[in-house]
Image (spheres, rainbow, N blue to C red):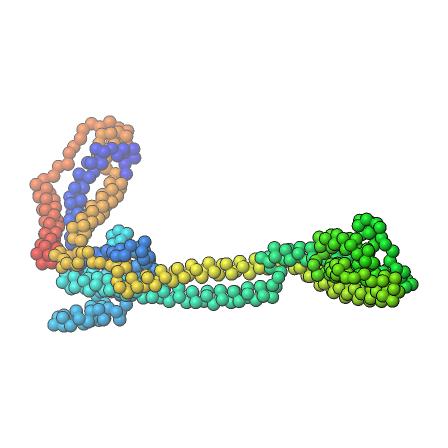
Length: 526
């Protein structure tokens, strides 16, 4: 390399021009080597078949398919199934029988199909099946058989997957149904065990407890009344027991109101009342009966006694007068009244005992329902946990039932072959020219490689060249003035010798390229 040399475009062009013969020779050699490489490669033909994913004939609004795969997954799955050696042998049995005259076996056809097949995605719903073979007719035959196999395998796979999905969903439905039945049984057992303490029974429990409290209050009041009545009866019994034989009853001139206040009509008998007093006592008894009917039941003993007294007084008003001063009837009447009071006292005692038992029962009922109400929040928490699992299983079961119906319809679609399917839209044809090797691109690549190699050699030689070729390089390198330039002097023999060598090299390269091109075009048809 000459120090201080500047490589301008003009200088570079001059350098390349000085190496023009080497560039031509390198290009020729590169093309020749590429042609020789092409000659050594086998001639291959490619047949293609285009398959389209055809949508289901039934709209998805009416029947949703259960098998759904993207095109990449579909092609990989079908390739694994179709290109299995056993499957290929079954596919090419008929073709091998037709080609038996050429000596091709079914195993060779299967190997050729496995090694020469290829799948390329064209778009989202279509792909191309290619088959490369040395025989163009055989390439088309293999591609045709494989395309039909892809279509049939897709239908078979989809039907099998739909049946498996249907069976799987049915098994899940049955399993979920059993779990749901077990959960319902546990829920039923829980409700039976804690009946009366459940949250749904809270309002009924409150109502029952309120009714029991109202009954208890009314019963308490009735017990108090019976106790008062018992006390009065005991007092009357003690009074009648201590009394001497009664004197004749004097005529009472008091008003009906005073008679009602002073005379306890419930403690005397009608026989103790004189005939002259009967009308007033009858009026007082009727007035008292009207008041008692407002607060007592019709079968109450006081009302019954007053009714008997009124009936006796009315009967005595119609009978003939008797001697009221007879002491024997008065004693008998007092004894009869005492017996009636004692009988009524025993009745009141029995009623008090019954009401005490009723009071105890009502208090136990109130305590029991109070306990149930207090346990309601606990039962609500436990029931919420059980119901959460039950609701989840129930929703899952309903969802699985819907999916089961969809799976059944999807399987029926695939069995009837009205679901998504593959369709051959471009059948494979016999190729009219080879697919490989690519002669033109290979030769051009070899020519480019030869030119690049020559360029590198020329650049290296120029870098190692120390010759001074211009006045400026001499002045810059030697720092002396230039007096004159003497050009290169060649005689005719030197010039002729160089031309012969160059012509021979170029001719040899041209002959090699022409021979390779003629062989490829005429013999191999490339």
